[in-house]
Image (tube, rainbow, N blue to C red):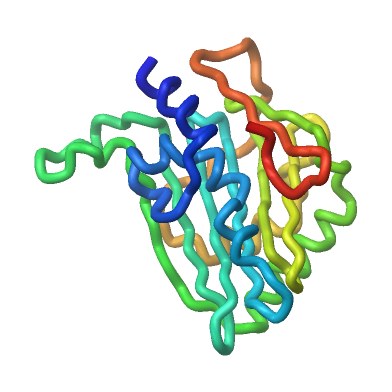
Length: 210
């Protein structure tokens, strides 16, 4: 019930900081996925900023990959967690540990970043139009928000409409993922699940309906 309440609050809270912190994440998840901060900063002549969010059944695994242009390349951050509330990660010095995302950072060269962007561009060109589409938290999907060449947009790659295992950008993202958390592959989803929430892309495909 507490988790569901936090996700309801997320609909009206704007992301401004770290999604790794479980308290802040519960309050700002929708805004983070929508890329509100990227959209706000997006302008012509600015640096590109990509955010890839993988929902592998929300309560089982979430992963995010952030790639933001810097001088001579891109700052790349990988974040991941397995089942929410994993008690084996509890420590008295860090009681929120079971809900935190593991995070690693590397700096990519322009050439390395370009490989990821090119692979993503091919997948995006072949994907169904994301406008007005809705996904549930107990499914597998990717949502990508990005400012590219001064234009902001949101893309959706969802189970049963896209072969997620064939996406070209995914192995390129995973190449630099040093979180140590095994990638949860796509599986058939059965039933409705508990505490399911929904994310819907707006008609302009540049945000999420709240």
